[in-house]
Length: 79
Image (tube, rainbow, N blue to C red):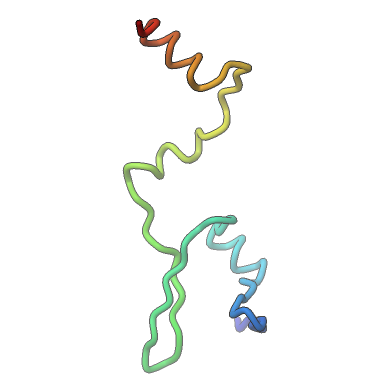
């Protein structure tokens, strides 16, 4: 199936919703563009194995404490 999108004056394009859903593309995902004889190939960029596993847990721990307070609690007071 073919999908169509129009580029804005600033060079931005919208990836059609069907493609985003099928490939699991979310805001902030990097894409690579490669020029081939058939045209442009767009792929989801490989994610860093060091950070990708952590991204699904980001934001699930809630705290009223600041980062400094949490670190002080873990390490103890610095004198």
